[in-house]
Length: 343
Ligand SMILES: [Zn+2]
Ligand SMILES: [Zn+2]
Image (cartoon, helix red, strand yellow):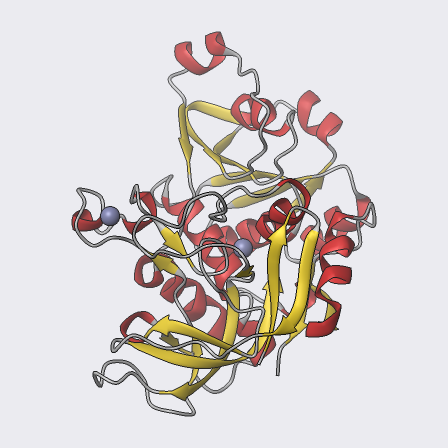
């Protein structure tokens, strides 16, 4: 089969590799679509970040080259030997998060915090390939009525679901989202779907603000947001730019919550007087869980509460993965979600 494998920084190759061998509780997915994520770009540009290179992954024993891709949808090609999970032919969104199952975090169903966390497409083979293995029991079944392309957005939408859940309920709340890329737009749409009274998207790019406005949000440039007196109950930083987190904290009302999503290596400065005296909550949000977050995201998409089709800006063949990664890296701000056709 074909797979797009990370060999080293700046070296991703589409090549012939053996098909995956499933464990008894795993099924094999024939991948239809796989999104390219900012994380894939980070590994290409600055990696290895989570890809095991010098030493194999402590629990899974995996080592580069690794097939990238964790925003996956496809059909079950081989069902799990132990009988768990859906039968052959079922369209699924496979779970990519693998905890050890034994540590204090895994025992509390916080697998994303596992010190020996494994992630398909990062620490072991993912979905930028013809076939991918996945734990059968935690695959989400995609119902009829939603396209495979839309289902490929379940994983990024689940990032938005989890981020907002960090603030408790957003029903009736005002939500500000700093960053209008794919994740920022999804946070805004999920907030609206969950009953937020007012949603504001902050981004310097006019097209992104227009896109947010078409879905009922207020669009502001960072300068406009800086000078506005409006504060939000919840401010989500979904940009990764060094100025985004300080802005998100500042836009958070007294006692409100700032959720940090964007990652970048450099530290940022936050106004401590503002944070401490106004008793703001500052919390990070990272890996999502298949049931708490991804199932909710799938349901919002299936019911049409969170439309995602207009976030897909590019569709490319698997052979062009490197071009797709470079597209994300380009200054072309019209790039939102790049989907790779793996079928
Ligand atoms: Zn992703
Ligand atoms: Zn664990």
